[in-house]
Image 1 (tube, one colour):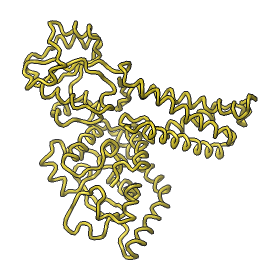
Image 2 (tube, one colour):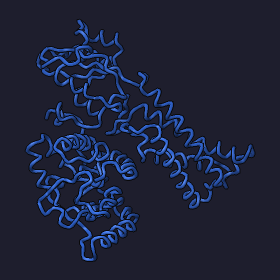
Image 3 (cartoon, rainbow, N blue to C red):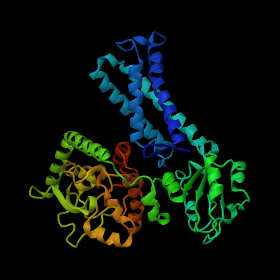
Image 4 (spheres, rainbow, N blue to C red):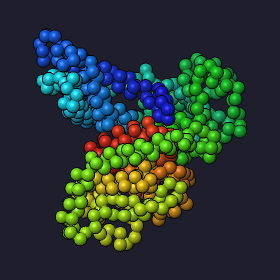
Length: 465
């Protein structure tokens, strides 16, 4: 089950999990104070006599930190040990930030002993909730009951959703073969076409019907689907269903009319103004914070390659609406890395230097692109800019590749969060599907969510090359 917030789909189980953990984290300072004060009046913990503001600050910082390390991501596949590591990192980070806030705002201050006990309680409580959540989430309690109307080539794409994260929100009741289906898929899950589709849907307690017919011109049940829709049963096109459940736009079921007449794929003047304002503010702030790391990177490059070695690497890339610009990076490869022509970066690239490998894993090599953001050539969030040599070739081979250039390229993006770095044509197609999802659903809130989750990519080195 999902709830749509502006352009983002939020899973109900994840929302419920965050609410439970938020409540426990809010209660943790009270329990920590009671343990530290051994039954004495805990209202004396803070100078104001009220612990609520301090507890709310801790809980908010902890939830933000847990989001940043991917604990509320539907794509999270780590085991319980990995979850525990992330919870510990997030709660300890929240404790450290809380201590900083308490120093700046003395009225919120709590004793260090109370804060330490609070952090331990928060870690234990969140981990126990996660263990219980792992056992409950696969039950049908939160899953929508879905009928797939169609059992041919298009419907087969639903059988390819094998990842647990992709199947978390729904359960397919059955496939219903229709006239014109190219071939029948999953015969063991076929349901006979009833005389009254609406009555059948009511009897089987359906929540949604996904239209996956190979040929809509033959036997489209308009009146029956209208009855279902008016009775509160959602009717979805296959691309929209897959978009919501997988976080990408599937090219194999896509048609131009879905893009032209569907929601999204547009940006208002106000949205563009807010996005530009955010880019300018955030890039200036981050430049100030990141300057020491950038200085260390420049010194490291000079020490490894000599005082005359270039620090920056300028490369021609394709920007919004096909405009060409030079992207700035710290040089992470040898000076003659592309003497044989343009090449994709690959895993364990032998052309990378020792300092370059460190910069790539920590994403420090990307920091000079903040200058591109200030110039207006890039945005903080968007599809990664590609080289003209590759773009001209990919536009010939891959449908809808040109559409990713309708927005500014970004330093980070939805595809970088959802798919590991790849250099093959298949990888490019997969990343394009995530890029199109971003282009369709982009908003300031979505950008903020991507930026927060990028922290997990940096800390755990996902997708780095």
